[in-house]
Structure formats: C-alpha cells, structure tokens
Image (cartoon, rainbow, N blue to C red; front, side):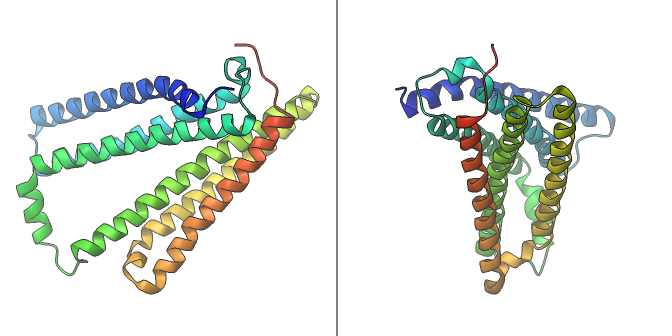
Length: 253
C-alpha cells in the first residue's frame, strides 16, 4: 500500500508549481498596475498596499478554481485510482493537499501585505492614528484570527461541496440515459448555485457582523458557526468517500 506521506508529496508537487505560477502572474499584474499609476498620476500614499490587496482577491479565486479542478481529476483518472490505496485515504490526501496549497497561498499573501505595509508604514501609521474609537490591538487581532479560521472552514466546505456535486454527477451518469443525465445535471447545478449563493450570504453576514467577535456573548455564536461549517464539510466528505467506493468509475487518461 502507498503511504500517506508519499502520496501527499506526489499530489502536492504539481499543485505547488501551479500556485507558484499564479503567484508570479499576480506579482506581474501588481507591478504593471503600479507602473501604470506611476506613469499617469503617480503612486499615492497607501496605493501599493491597496493594489496588492485588490489583486489578491481575484487571484485567490483563480487558485481555488484551479486547485478544485486538479482535486476532482484525481477521482476519475486511472493514474490515481489504480494506486494501491484505500478510497478513504485517497480522498483525505487529495483534500489535504488542495487545502495545504490554499493555505500556502494565504501565507504568501500575508507576506505580501506585510512587505507593502512596511514600505508604506509612515502613511499607514498616520492613517491609523487618525482613526479613533476602534478596538485595541489585541481585540483586533482576535477578531481577524476568527475571520481567518472561518474563511479556512468555508474553503474546506467549498472543496467538499464541489466534490459532492462532481461525484454525484459521475455516479448518476453511469446508469442514466443521455436525456436523463442532462436533466439530472441541470438540477444538480441549480442546487449548487443555490448553495453557493447561501454560502455567500452567510459569509457577507459574518463580515458585516465582524464586531460580534468583540463581544463575549457573540463569540459563542461565531464559534458555533465555524463548527457548523466543519460538520457540514465532514458529512459531505463521508458521502463523497461512499460514492467514490461504490459508484464512481474512472476514465482513461
């Protein structure tokens, strides 16, 4: 049987290269944006940090989509399915590999933020000094950490939800006629869109209630929200492993 660590390294190697290519493309876009600003109106205070933060969000979605595609290919390709390893371990390694690369991307973005903040520390310090009535540093750090953990939890659920839809479609397509396949696919995609909208609404509500982390009474509810997201991800993962074992067939590479 193939070991957990060996398979994790194999899966992570190509994904690590993919994420690095996207990060390099992000740096190039940031450089071009700042160069354009310099040539037109000049780079203003805080613009380096602002541009870096602005481009990090679309870049994250590109990373998430590309890793999700790589994640799903593992389930239906002979290259991985014929490896002597149980479906549970294969699914777990695949999920952790994708999550580790997203976490790696997040760490790199934090480094970018810190570097740009240091480059514009005088401007940012003046800006922060003008803001009064805000929370103290310890409370702000706690709130930011809470939102970061919630974000990671939602990412895990996003990966398991995508796998659930993909494996369900693969399983149903194995025994349904072509017309029925298209009908089932449409229904499943509608369900996915609905779930994504609900998740987006949930995330926006949490962001709008960012101050809830600052009060002891709301911290419990915030923690319960995180636990709820992880429970949903766990249930989806269990269903995914069952589908992988019983219904999903491979396709030739």
